Image (cartoon, rainbow, N blue to C red):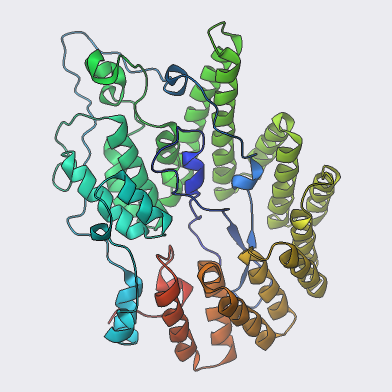
Length: 477
């Protein structure tokens, strides 16, 4: 089953921003999902990596001046005339987000099993940024959202405060960014839409240091909002079903970033080279987002142009990852020969110290596209031996077995993977596939899916996909 809403890449929003208590809101790698179009099994899918974190080298954060990091042109204000366009946000829901897994267990199993669920709540942690980080690190994203509501209430931006003027700070804007990023990750798109609306494109005067008395922020200038927040707001329409609007916003953001990078590349100010490199990284981040957005609107011509631009400026490692992603995108378009060429180009850039896993995955996906499922299985299995923590590989091996007519073997592979390492293997992708296979195997699939729910209850924190999707269980009366 292909997921119509792309999985948000939370970690990229934090990259290149100053280290903070929110840095742990990350994912290892983002995987897009593409259906095997010719298959008679609509519920099964292979996992593809496009432009996730792996396409950018993980470099230490550049140590640049605040004036470089915060640079953004504030709107003009007429002296003596109060601005009419202020940013007046507020939490839009009066109640906390509840845990759908625990509710489903209580409904479908019993209350005793529901009590086996051990999740951190806002009451279990300190009521500050340290507590928020603890919740995020433990995957308790709904509890983290609930804690942000408490912390924003302290700042007079809680429920019922939308529409009222308020003083902003770097901390309050970082809180809002974290809350909205979490809501997107959890698929709470309507709440995110309502709460993001007052921020617009972060161009109102009261989100800039210049709006406040110089003594409040040690005479700093520029944007108080992290760049990651701007990127998230530009991307948000993708998740709301209007990707072309996101494409317009990202293009506008790219133009500004490009202008700033060009300024530093010509400037003679202190640390100009470091500043230019810093903004080049931000430019690359926006380009990655535009590529993913162009994929959503199926503008493959734009995708090709941007990938070519990214590859020209990339280091060897970055270029290898980009070419691999490019090949996978061409596979999605049905261009097997074009994909094979990009995979070969990526393989030629491999250095002796580099892992062979990406190449094995590329060759496996190519074999799937050529209906050579046994060869694909062998390649994924070899990659899995080298990277046993990569659960995507178990997922793809099971799909290969299914397409080879080995339904029971596919189920056994998934179940064995979950038994060996339940926490990472009880991920949304594998749960969707295993639930689908149970339905293909028997009319009595519900009992097996409820056993999966029991495992999720005991081993997983928050799921980011509804139980009606990943376990195909009806959880409402």
